[in-house]
Structures are given as structure tokens and as C-alpha cells.
Length: 478
Image 1 (cartoon, rainbow, N blue to C red):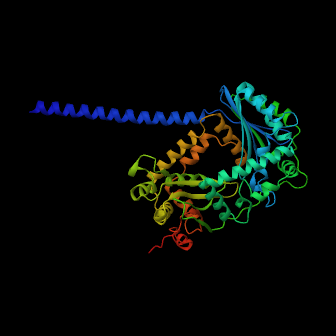
Image 2 (spheres, rainbow, N blue to C red):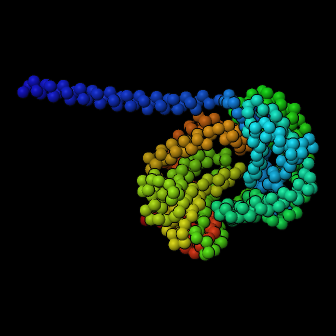
Image 3 (cartoon, rainbow, N blue to C red):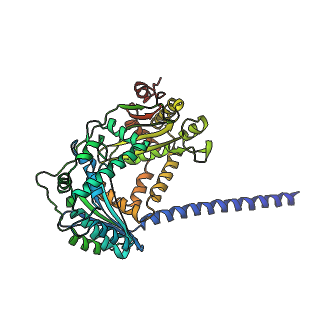
């Protein structure tokens, strides 16, 4: 009897010892993984920044890659336009590749193709961007092409007339993209009467009347050294790019005639716009409150809160096992075809909300569930879901930096928004500092009892009256 007891005790002790060893091994693995992750963030190549004599900044991250992306990030966009020239920044982007005093359009295209490079550009409400993707050995040639199109574009009358038609056709394409249409409406009502309320492409009457003088005046006014960042990522030698930039952009002015152009403050207005069209199969709707600007400390908690709401599409898997409570409600109740939480930031303001696509009879139910989630963020969000959202946000931020072009874009945007590139380890630390209490406090200030902006297109008869939506932005407590 005693020997059996001794053997069983020994077996139990052995089993306990093995389990303890397994726990210690798992703890070591998780600690090692965390250490490896932190070391990886710290070992990211530094972003080097040099300011040229004309105030232009050169910012690079050298990863030793055989390819590179180099581009010009310019601190101007549709927000810097007036009612009379709205659309000129986008028009200028189109004209940049239509020939310079040194190259015809054909010569420019052949030179880029012979390099095996890609040349592209885009315009947003606050930024205009021209960039090139190329081999690392061709980065000097790509920088020279970028300097040529920014400083020496001819803006020929024939090319201007041709681009009018191109832009008008692009406007028709945008009008068929209902998400773009809804967000333009959302900006128009949220920032009504201010520059952010205008569209990027501009109204049709402006596109038909913009002249060469308008384009030249816009460049002369806004394309100044202190408002331009030459960003590079990949196989980029910083010192070499600084030397090349100093030669290529020496003719770019660094001073203003009169006072420097200042961005006009844009106030947020709680309001709505509904474009009802019962012939459409689905209602496309966006609801948003005023968010934080790029440099506002509240931006990180709002990004985490945005991740908690999440996004979902009926083509996704997961069913009722989604982490997002709103996605679970959408699946179980068939509330929508898709939804996407968004956090759109500008210099001093932003839009934080949700865009969703529903059938007519489900709009009211989805709005109810969405606002219930918003109120939960303000009152009783849990630490568990905050930790999960922080991990998802970290992953998404790192995945977005996969490649030389996203890294170059990150450098250029951050240099304009923050006047520096935030290191990944610092960004990770700021995300880690967010807790459930921080989320509740931040959401309470930005969401609770605030007037939202609402924009909807399609069969939206079921969308609740604005007063009902407004009254659901708080909970009565007893």
C-alpha cells in the first residue's frame, strides 16, 4: 500500500514538474518573442533629415534595397484653394507630366520607361505628391525628372484643353463610386463654408475655366522650399541625395511675396445631407463626429477605438465569431452588406465615424447598433478588447510599411504633419500606453453628446430623422 502510494506520488510529482517546465518554457518563448519584437522596432534604419538652404527638407531611410522610391511631398492641396480656383491643385497634378522646357511628353515617358521606373502623382485636401519608383542606381535620374516637372512644366494651351476632357471624365468615374460621393457629401456638411468642405476635383464650371495663369499662380504661391519634402526610401544614399537635391532645387524659392499662406481654420458643423434615390439597390451612409488632428495626442486613442469598431464585409469569413461586436450584430441580424470605421485626419481637425452599405429596411437597425457601440466605448469598454485592438492596430501599421513606396509615403506625410518621422518604437510605446480608461475618457470627449455629421445616398427612407440620431448620442442614466 505504501509503495503504491509512493509510486503514485512520484508520478504526480513528475507530471507536476513537467507541467511547471512547460509553463516556464512558454513564458520564456513569449518573453523572447516580445524582446525580439522590441529589438526589431529599435533596429529599423533611422530616418535622416537635412534642411537645404531654401528650407526644403530631404528625409531618407536607407534599407539597402536594390530598388528605391523618391518623391516630393508638398504641403498644399484643395484646402488651400478658393471657391473661384477650386480644383486647380488637382488640375496641376495632371499637367505635371505633359512636358517641360527640357522634355516633351513623349521624351519624358520614354525616359521613365527606359529606366524601368514608375512615375505617379496624387492630390489630397492638404497634400500634393509626385513620386517615382526605380532601381537604386537610377535615383539621381528620378530626382532630376521630379525637379524638372515641378519647376519647368510648360503648361501648353493644347495640353490644358486636352486635360479638361480627361478630368471631366474622371469626375464622371468618381460620381459612379458611391463611397467617394458619400465622403464628399460628408465633408461638405461637416465643414460647410470652409475649405475642407470643397471637393478635391472641384466643380465642373471651374474645370472648364481654369487657365494657364491660374496654374502658374498656384505654383508661384505654394510651391516653396519650406513646404516641400524630398523623401526617399530603399537603396538611398542620404548624403548623395542631399547633394543632388541642392543642385536640382536651388532655383526653388524659399521666401514669399508678402505673408506666407496660412491654412484657414475649419469648424465642424453637426448636420446632414440625404440624397434619396429609391431606384438604387442599396443605401450608402456615413456618420461621423469631429476627430483629432494629426499632431493631437488624442489621435492614438481614437485610432484604437476605431479598430475596436472594426470593419466587415459579407464576403469575409468568421461568421458570428468576429471580434468586433458590430460585425457580430451585422452577421446575426443581416444588418448590412459591409461597414468600415474610419479616422480621417487633417492638420487641426478630423472625421471619426463609420461608413456602411445597407438594404433600405436595415438602415435604422444598423444605426441603432452602431450608436450603441459608440456609447459602449464611452462607458464600459473592456481591457481585453482594448488589448486586442492595440495588437491589430500594431499589425496594420507595420503591414502598411511593407515596401519602399509605403515607407517613402510615410516619411513624406509625417514630415509635413509632425515636422519629423516618429520612430516605430515610439509609436508602439504610445499605442501600448492606451488603456480602457483612456479610451473611455477620449471617446467621452469626442463622441458622447456630440452633434454628428450624416451623409447618405440611395434608398435611405429608413435612416432615422437627424433629431433621433442626435438623441442617441448619449444615454440617460438613473
